[in-house]
Image (cartoon, rainbow over all chains, first blue to last red; front, side):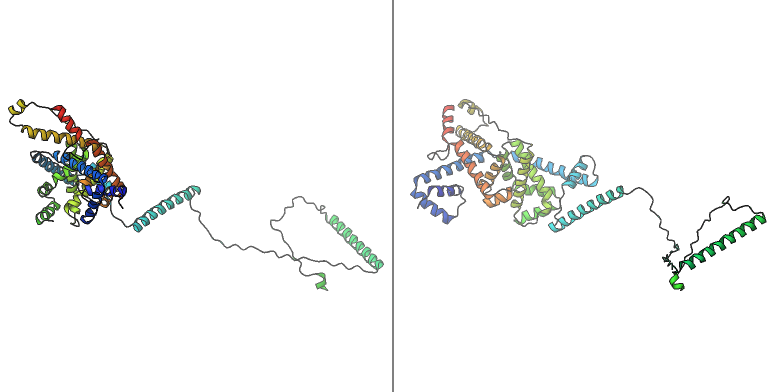
Length: 228
Length: 207
């Protein structure tokens, strides 16, 4: 079944002579059947033939080429001179060319290696930034010196003292004993006072009293129960 | 690769400019015409084609003979054309063709001029060329380059797509568009395969 639309897509290829010979025979047979496609093909062929004819006429005359060759040779020699000069002494325009070649130079590197280099670069940049931030956060002082000394610290072991008071059942005897003791105490006090007065000593005062620098703590161990 | 070309390439790789110039002579017309049809200006075409040769001279050390010399050179040419397009340094400058209709007496009095028949053919061809260039000027530089690579260089669409950096579909569309423009401008008739109606009419009026 002839399909004009499908055939016309191939007609351009055929007109450009880019169709294989066996396909060309099939297309020729198709063109024999359809007048419209045949006309379209003829128009394409003619357009391309006229284009070829026109383009060939634009070719320069033979006397153009000697001059072209001379100019080309001159340009190549200038370029090689510039390259050699810039390689020897990179300065001025040669320096610019050299720099441009340096900047635009490319080296083929495998992708994994390139990505590893990029990652390493990014990591190093990040670590530098982090260390800078850390150093600015700390005060700018000299590094502290650590001195180790052994100090003996007395450990006070306190022990609670529980005093047990036994009350005598016989209150009379107890009262009498207490009164007797009080009387003995009063007697002893009065005797001591008399003795002091007799010795001419001034009564005891706190003038000139200085508290000691260290306090003594007497720890009473045990209990009355233990004393029993 | 012929042995002479091989020898010239080896010498050029050592920096021998003369050998490179001899090598260039074999392909310079093809490269120049491609450049001329691409930028449609003789001065620009010469600059562009010489840029191609300069790049080739600088890079000839990297030529390993894995492809033919011309295939390698064509890659450089395409890259040069694409860079020329990207840089935008040069614009498409329409070339004005001065056509003078000379009388028979003036032609006969001037010995350098061709015969009248030759003159008519020349005039016809120049007008054809102008019309073709006008049609191509309405394409984008990429479309123009793709058409030239297809029509002149007979590259496949796959090769063009790889060289230019586009899809095969884009390459096909570019060629189709170029041919459409040419048909539109040339106004080609089926019955007049060597000319086109509009041009014939102009010549008839002029004569």
